[in-house]
Each structure stands twice: as structure tokens, then as C-alpha cells.
Image (tube, rainbow, N blue to C red; front, side, top):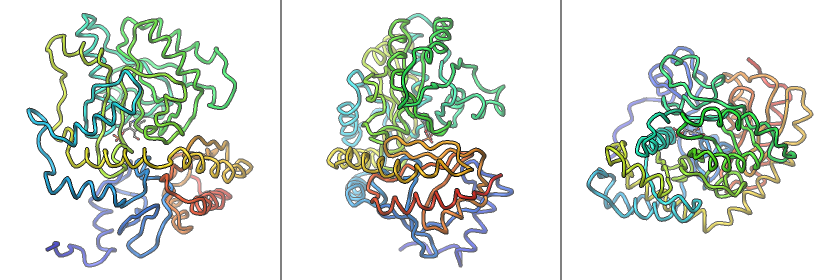
Length: 436
Ligand SMILES: Cc1ncc(COP(=O)(O)O)c(C=O)c1O
């Protein structure tokens, strides 16, 4: 028997939520409006009042197949009838091993050791720990710092925050609590522009200067996500890989946002044809069903860690390799690989490019850019988050901007007609957007 509902009405639920429940990056005193969702299916989110919104966010990069997919639902039903969870210390199970085989098969060649973590941020923490333990095992314990580029975003936990952009990230607020890492300039040359070797000089000088103290360089390949929705040139990654090889520095790719096809390649690093020593995956890993992440390492990294003192890798969360999440992830990967995902992404890219281009002429707009199934309209000024989501909801779409960025990364199953409704709503709202 389902429990009887606590709230007599949706209004009562919303009043409770507003007072007691924190939402992401939000005030508990003056929260912006939230919209109550009753269900979600395919590319639609249905609100409690019956309105249906076309989803342009894929729940922050994750719901790549849309919602309520029968194949992933089925995998979860099967798995829950066996077990929802068991500890991973001293035990193992088919869902974890099955998923690990898939991840090893589809990620670049040297990555064949898998550590399952609970969320993207935690997988970044794990990657950082791997890099530091690697050097400690190799007798170079001084290599404890990370290097990264400005404009990055790697998560909200302390280790991850410390490698987010130092200005737009949370460094100011937590400065005394964060380790100090080393930052190079943002990769300045756009994805489609002509390459110029000068663009790499700043990183090269900085890494050469500090390589004796740097455990690893961490970077989002090709697409800088929450730190600015910026698409940079593939040559940058190639130069970075060469330099790390020359100096013996580990390279971590954070593919948490870009993994599983979003940029037009299964993993964004494939645009540059380079592989990292450590890779973080999350978000779309389970098709957006539940929280699961993975940190993959090369055999060299994993074995070095395990050969040094204390002979083990020092991480092991309670819900590591949760069988339900692993079953959802395996179903999601199989579904993706069996689908014409490249065609879908190319179709979405072309529709976004055509339909968003006219926005570039609007006075409020600074730049429009698209890559794969990602469309970005960068404004001159930040939008008013108390008002703008409502304007999109009024137009039947779910678009949630942040700061100066109105961006979409829809489920891959979205139709051209649905996408056109989304892009028309964006053009309409941005004609006269409410600003802060
Ligand atoms: C590139 C990147 N890394 C890490 C994270 C953090 O992932 P999570 O929110 O699952 O902790 C995100 C989330 O937006 C991300 O985009």
C-alpha cells in the first residue's frame, strides 16, 4: 500500500518545500520559484497541474534517452528483484563487472581499471587521490598539487572546488579551506577557429615551471561546461598530451559532462584523438536514472598505486558500485550503442545551429555557439533567475539558464519539431530578457 499523501494540496507541498528544502545554489530565505513535477516521459516533463514541458536540459546532461525508458526501467526491475544494494568491500556482483567491461570497451585504450564512485564530484576526488598516491608510490611525495585551466568546473566537493575556475568558482568563499593549485589561462581558441601555437604558451610555461610539484593536470576535454559552456580547439588537447608525456605528468580528463556522445563523439577527447591516464565519468552514465560515477585509470597508474605504501588505494564509499545504478548504466550504454546516436547528435547539432543563429542579432546576445547536442546563447548580462525560468515554462519548454548563459543539451531522442519549439522559445524570451 502506498503511504497516504502528507500534503493536502500541491500548494501545501510547495509551501513546505519553499521553507524547508534546499535546492541547488539557492537561498532558503528568498528561493526562486520551483515547478512541481508529477512525472517525466520521453522528452517531456509533466507538471503537477498537467502542463507538459519539452525538456531541453536532459536533467543537466544526464537523461540522454529521455525519461522513463522501458529498457532501463526493465533493467532496474530485474535488478531490484535480486538486490538493491550490497557493500562492495569483500563482495562483488555481476552488475558491477558487466558495467566495467562496457566502460573498458568504450573508453580509450589505456583505461582498463575502474573505480566506481557515487557522483561526479566524488569521482574527481578519486582521480585527484589516484594522482597523488601514484607519485607517493613512485617515491615522489612532493607531487601533491594539481594544474588546470581557468574557466573549468569539476564539482562542488572540496578537492573538486579547488580546481574549478578561481574567479567564477567558489574559491573566494572557501579560500582558506581549499588547497592552492596552479592555473593556466583558459584555452582561448574556439573549437572551429584556426589553431595558433601561441594559445598553448601559457600552459606550457606554467607546467614546465611547476612540474616537480604537480601530480596531474586535470581538464574538461573540448567542452568547458558549467564554468562557461566554452568549446575549445582540439590542438590544445594534443599539445597538452605531448607535454604531459614529455614531463612525465599525469593527465586527467573530466568527461563527466561530455561523456556518452554529447559533443558528437562518444568521449570528447576523441575529437583530438588523445587519451588520458585517468578519466572521470558520471551524469549520463546511468542515462540520468541515478547517481553513479566512475574513475578509470590505466594499468600503469593503478598498479603503481597498489605497489607503493600502503599497498591499497585509499577510497571506498558505502554505496560504491550500487547494483541498481550499475544495472541502469549497463542498460543505458547498450541502448546508446544500439541507437543511431551519431545521426541523432548530428541532427540536433544542425537544428540548433540553424535555429539559434538568428539569436546572435539580438541586442542582449553576445555570442551563439553549438557543438554536438549542445547549444549556447551567451548574453551580455546575467538573467534574472526569479523570472526567466517561468517565461520558458509559459512557452512549454524547460530551459534553465545560469548567469549570462542560456544553454540547452536535450535528450538525444528529442524530435526536430520539439527542438524548434525550444529554440523559438529561446529567441522569443531573449528579445527582451529580464536581467538582474
Ligand atoms: C565537468 C563536470 N565535472 C564534475 C561535475 C560534478 O558532478 P556531480 O554534480 O555529479 O557531482 C560536473 C557537474 O556539473 C561537471 O559538469
